[in-house]
Length: 156
Ligand code: SF4
Image 1 (cartoon, rainbow, N blue to C red):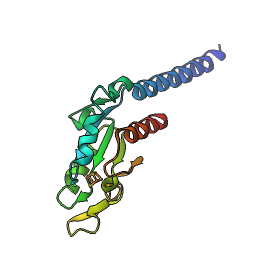
Image 2 (image 1 turned 90 degrees about the horizontal axis):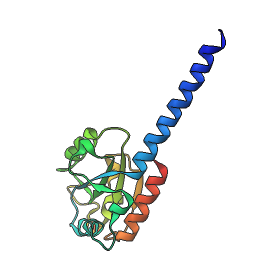
Image 3 (image 1 turned 180 degrees about the vertical axis):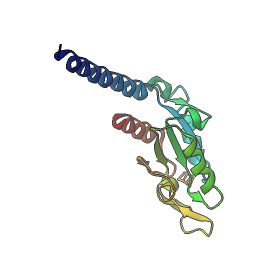
């Protein structure tokens, strides 16, 4: 029965592929998002809270705001990176399980914005972490954030 191991291997490959597709589908349908402000003015944070109101209601897309980095898939960052917040930001990112994604929300988070070149400001989030999606604006509008998150979900 020389054909049996080959058939088993093919079935196993297919099962593995189907399982990976299923996991990817589940991740896309239910991303858990952790929000961290590393030094902004809170303007973008208020707009993020807007996403949870009935008007924008991102939970209809399966997006859930999560408080623990250990359960989060996506790190939503606002504000520039300051010298004080750099290590904390890095630690939070390291506590998130892989695969994980980083979204920079607001001009400060994308490039340092109005705080750029401040004595205690290092710049945008990408000075410390790999950023997958940039959502500019001061502050970013909820519609822009939803658009950015949907684009990210398409990448997952
Ligand atoms: S982008 Fe504008 S609203 Fe957002 S944290 Fe920076 S200064 Fe505040």
